[in-house]
Image 1 (cartoon, one colour):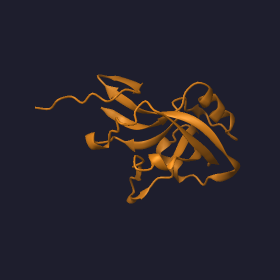
Image 2 (cartoon, rainbow, N blue to C red):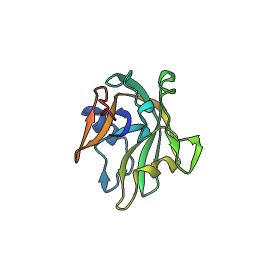
Image 3 (cartoon, rainbow, N blue to C red):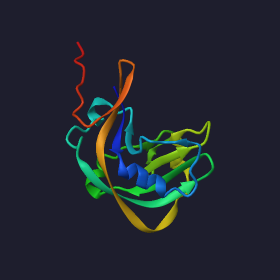
Image 4 (spheres, rainbow, N blue to C red):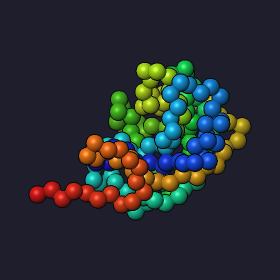
Length: 152
């Protein structure tokens, strides 16, 4: 099952993003990503863009002592895929963001509530659209089209 989908960052991009953190918290998130949809339905799984690289821009930073993260701007071509609605207000779309680190007991979902301070200028980073999958007791990142199990 696809647990969530979005733009994922690896290697040097992860190190670079963490270098921008003004106040890193105890639990460092090393699976850096911008979630497009949590628990997508089959219709919300976007195999047409999976595995493709995209440039996005970091435009703000926020930290409230519980969550530390970055506001990002997605290219217009991706906005039709960004369906990350606020679970408390399903008519409101969440600000696209990356959770960088958390304090003990904090939840990554709350990064959306940060007040992001604008950076002096946007910073371009490149990520790849993928799926975080949980199947058969394993969790992994995939950049391949999702193989749906046939239901009878």
